[in-house]
Length: 378
Image (cartoon, rainbow, N blue to C red; front, side):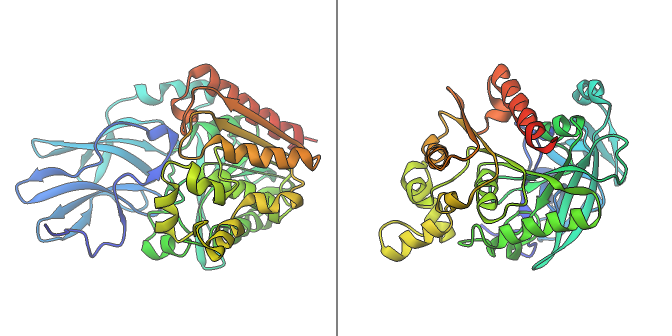
């Protein structure tokens, strides 16, 4: 066995995420002919089809300027079809012809018309502590460059990436009048191994610095109102939202969903905590040094400094980020007399926001909008 892409420092597969490109389709590889494969490769917050020869030559089939999150591909009779979310539209089927995409279907995104058409998403590059940070910025229709209440939306993983295809949350929140900034901070996939590896055991350090640099840039560009900033995230994104409100008071409200508040207990409570913490170098509670390292990257350690109103959302059956973590932070903040709410969704799992029971998904969305409206619309 030999690698055909060992010289390509990019993630193989559909690593750039958006709710509107969820599918069970194959991201490849698929045979194009007897000597060529086609596969999706994550590149700068996009999933781009590449042709890879058996000699190991990888060639992109679309330019890097294409704002797409491809989810699946198939080849038949020398023709390539892609399912992809492009420029804020939900998943549609496209044919790739002479280096251009031709949309074949329209049903996948037809439902979006009731929300005012396509979601406006701009690609920004802002200066960060270790180099440029890519940000996908979703804005209300007609917002232009007006200063608006802005939400920093942090992806999970941490080895994932935001894609330009849009999310249900960004559609909901832009229609409520918010800008939604989706940054690919250090630790994100699709930007090469060095961008990922620098996070490793430094949760709450390089990622927090990058997140605050994004906020600084949006305020400096007069796109974000510094007095009306919010932060939200799921899983690792929930961890980082909780961490940020413990190290800064810049955010007026926060929503953390299925986050990691206590790395010490998560080591054993998460179904893959032992393996993940060992691989990432986060530490373990089997030594004093390991315990200190885990605690030093636990939002619970900053609980006494949290003044930002926090809404905690938790799926009861989540085995990746169990409810025990959210309950510890909720209890600590209640004892401290802070503004905090905790909502536990029965029978639901880690990705409830995409695959949960419809009425619970609606309830989740309504609570998020109401929470930010309560504290950012004063």
